[in-house]
Image (cartoon, rainbow, N blue to C red; front, side, top):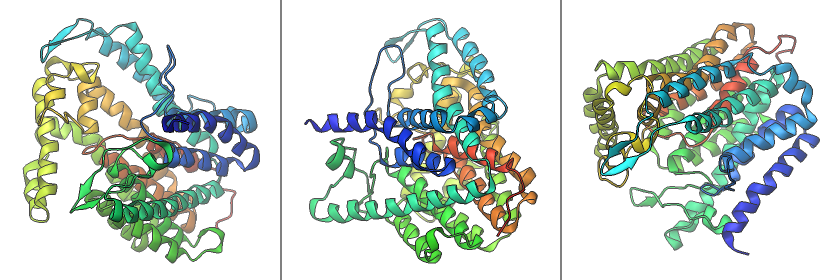
Length: 452
């Protein structure tokens, strides 16, 4: 059997597998198992490409499997959530913004010697479909399926155990790369080779994710969750929580990613030493910074030169990378013209996007790409899906006992961390929106559960 077929079969079989998990596990456990199982272990960069519908890749397969399982076996939870009663209402405004983007980009244009077509009705349908399946659906599933205080502990445990499983796989990938120089589990199991990434002469693990940065942010979030379990004394299965946290931290260190390790170390330390309300304030501050940064950058109020100079004192390579992100912003902001509010519609229509920098990489910062394609309205609507649940949790955290408050605040910190990371890196999966939806559902959970 051709190895690429193995990857396609994995995507196809995940739907019935996900449904069967809902038939066997309680609601929150099933949702966490399906979403994290698909996000962490399905292959990247392969998809079933059917006519007239978006390609069925690992992200869509994951959340459609979760939706199907929940609809078949947990229908009361889906019905009780009432779509549109939470952050998913923002999808209506996304649709209107997509219409505005199409109306302001109806004419074809020349860019770098190529004719880029204008945007029409089908473009609105396709973009809104992506927003529905990639943002609103994960958010809704999280909100609908995590609704009780005990679900908060379940989600934290699965996040920590996901990091533990990835620590083992990272150890395998890094260890096997010593004799073979490049060893990738994605290639070995699915036949899907990924582009190797190196840091300080050592390969960075990718496992089954899109790149090494995605692995690092995942491990940082898992470390924060594991630390919260230690602090709240809600470790899984009677295990030694400090040992669990140590293993996950070791996995994060092996990613060799500076940003991921900084996120994980700083927020894990904050989880251990500050009160839950203060940690919640950290999470809130992160999303506020993420939401306000685009305006600050457009008004030249952000001290980017100071940050680059500060970073150069620690690592010249990281300073150059950070400076490159700021140059991306200058490039797009300087060429966006009258498309500031609703963007150019597609990546290819952003003037000079594909030939920026080396001419090979192009733009790679999520927020600046989103600004170029969907304008400042599109950027802020996407960020609203992350910010709304964090603000909602901040307003309600006093209703939680100390142990549950620690877990809730750590989840706020994870969502805030990912929101900040979107300013400098890419958006590789829909997990942040699922976690944000879960945060919203948990923040509105009834207070009858006893805090032990």
